[in-house]
Length: 326
Ligand SMILES: Nc1nc2c(ncn2[C@@H]2O[C@H](COP(=O)(O)OP(=O)(O)OP(=O)(O)O)[C@@H](O)[C@H]2O)c(=O)[nH]1
Ligand SMILES: [Mg+2]
Image (cartoon, rainbow, N blue to C red; front, side):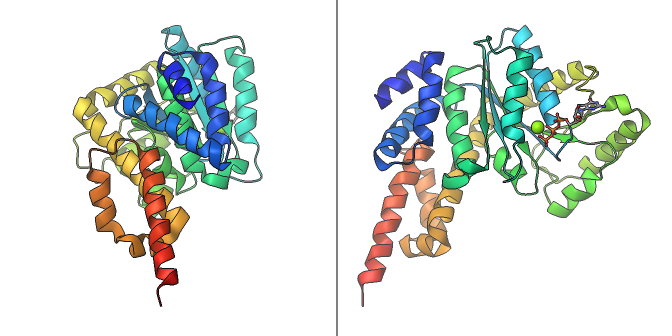
């Protein structure tokens, strides 16, 4: 059944999306084996192919959901199909679920070209980033574009950067986002910076100028410098410029750059999953970071999901050996 689900998704059968998402949510051992098989089969095709992936992150209330909604409608008007993953890492909030409901209302529940997946903290059980990655992989098989919204809380920017081709940082006018970025040392993460709420006028313009100056200082190995775009998700100002910036970033990546980026994201997620499950002790007992790097570089293991399971079993065996040895 698992293989069949993967084949249906790759044939863009959207009726297979919901069952696939349910399967990867099921943590019983039998379902997990099947889910890994589905994800591995998908990853073979979509790790370097499949949908374009765009992430939106930024402080709470910056207007990410409103902007996402505007982007969805625009991309739909260009006949693109969309999968949306809304990740809400905080435990008390229900914003993720609310986002889904609001989007369904605005973008039309009947539109089969849009699929929204909301993930709240309850799904943190198996690691929110891992769960988000599984959702992105499924949606990337069945849709043209995958959008990921997540609240930026210092660490999550890096995790969403590992999931997407283009990371959009949504800034709130007058909120001191630049200072936060410098403190967190993540100035190099965003590919495109949006100052939303341009309708606020001078305050938004001032923030845009600060960010332009600040992001010009970021340490980047490539030539791409993140454009700072003034947008009003509310009245539509700047959305043309945003689309141009998104396209510009995609073109700047080139096919090779895109592969490198997706591989780096895959490698980071395998490493983080194993560290989360077995700690640095488990990894060390098994062979450590150098051995992990070698296994990640082995071209015979294209699927990060399958590799995580395989290496997990090896680490468990290594841990059992140390426990039983005198
Ligand atoms: N003036 C103005 N308000 C906006 C704009 N975009 C969003 N807002 C408002 O800002 C508030 C937060 O918008 P959301 O889209 O929910 O923001 P968010 O970043 O998704 O928030 P969280 O998911 O809770 O982190 C809402 O009251 C929106 O109506 C804009 O372009 N201009
Ligand atoms: Mg939101």
